[in-house]
Length: 556
Ligand code: ISL
Ligand code: CA
Image 1 (tube, rainbow, N blue to C red):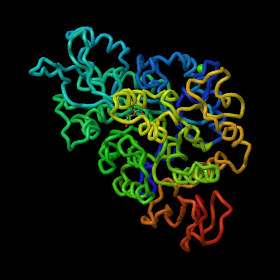
Image 2: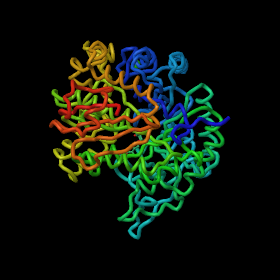
Image 3: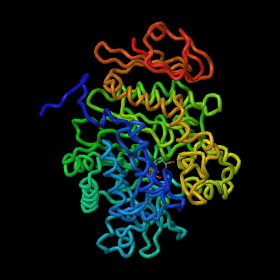
């Protein structure tokens, strides 16, 4: 059957969908143990349906010792005890489908937990049948008798990426925590296992996968050192067999289902993106490039970013992709600070306006938008002060590795962490003004609730017709009704402007102009925007200008 195409793009449900990411641990607790769970999510499906999102992405719900909150999987076919049972998962999926929504799950297959049965076996002996499921290498003996790791790779969570295992005297690779050993994808048995577990979830009816650090799966088996001018992330993301393995996965699994895939792709440049997502290559549907969410970083420190830099990324993406590729639009997730705190203005005066402006941008750029839980409330960063308040293994390891050793001052470290921490996104969802924001009926949530929950919560925004939630809802409805906002051509009309993001989306003779003021100061509007019919706006607008953080969509 011929595929319908619009403006040169093949039409697909996953291009027209808006995805909402749920971090189960922090969404809704149903049994008072302080940890969000699957029945909790099920109890909130009407809220999500009412908001108008199409697809839910569930961060890992699998059995895990939680060294990295579920990104360390012990059993791919079991539900994390804290989150409930397989029956709870089936009920959740049925509830999602029953409401006409879809659900994708997280596939974390670059690494497992060190408590996974494969690794428990693998570390036992060099001739164990599971030995080659992981990446074991001998150390490098030094003249002074010292043993060094096989190469100089660092772990994303501080320290070397190799740990010496006493039982066999060899090192295993872990690009993340010590408790997250990397799988050896060069072993065909490993790939068979992964394809099998993918089928297990697809056969249950999930609609696809968000694939954790998927470009890291193929390694140069010789493990050369990273040279001073090279980037380890870039090396890890561009291994020799990456495309071969993705095509095999597509051929053997994905192509047999009506599903979608989105790869988390740290280390893949925008220009290289088509190599993963061009539909003629049969690999993935879309990826998350890191350019936008790393704009506010200098290494792991906070960096002031500018609007022209952000705009340039979207233009680069549009130019690089062409009509055979597709991509994501996102600025927040469980690894980043809150949307409005990182990219908007979370002061009391501008929080709601700037949150609405950001959602306007996310839902009108070209690509599939991904919203993170709480974005629709305008949730903000948590006022973290001391290291004890954080939970994240990345933050704690870096503290031990860099601050406790005197390499970096506690003050400097904490000042930056308070801006970039992954824990900002992980504080519990704020449902209402009751104790613990209605997240848990227990006395202690696993991570503290943001004290601003009495003023920022779902009950409040659902009742307030002018809230971020209602605005997001209107936008979602507009997007659903407007193919020009999905498939229309994109053009930035003022790339140099320091505070105005002004772009058009055109499909045939339909022309939408989106004007976003990323500042507190009033900016003048060019004529076609000023004269167009206002379709949606976050302010009672004035003719010819945009006030602080004003967002306006007009039909020219
Ligand atoms: O950890 C990083 C460096 O700070 C990131 O850039 C990292 O490469 C990327 O965010 C990977 O994230 C994913 O895999 C991790 C997990 O902790 C994250 O939550 C997940 O999104 C390991 O599974
Ligand atoms: Ca619970």
